[in-house]
Image (cartoon, rainbow, N blue to C red; front, side):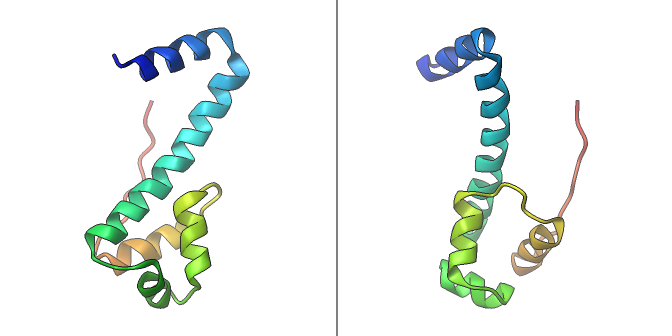
Length: 92
């Protein structure tokens, strides 16, 4: 376990508000990061992706950096641009 992981684990144990906020924030960050990574893997700029999604570059940037409350329909559009299928899972 890295020093950062150890710190996060310990902080979550002693601070429930941090734990709740961290988990939600990390999920949002991860979605944005994965979408950015998919865009870069496809060799697209934010502007190029925005044109394919029929939106503005600022919207793509906002999603990549602050993916909270992203619509399922938006994720489906991203998947289509990348030639992928969106899969949603419920896990324990």
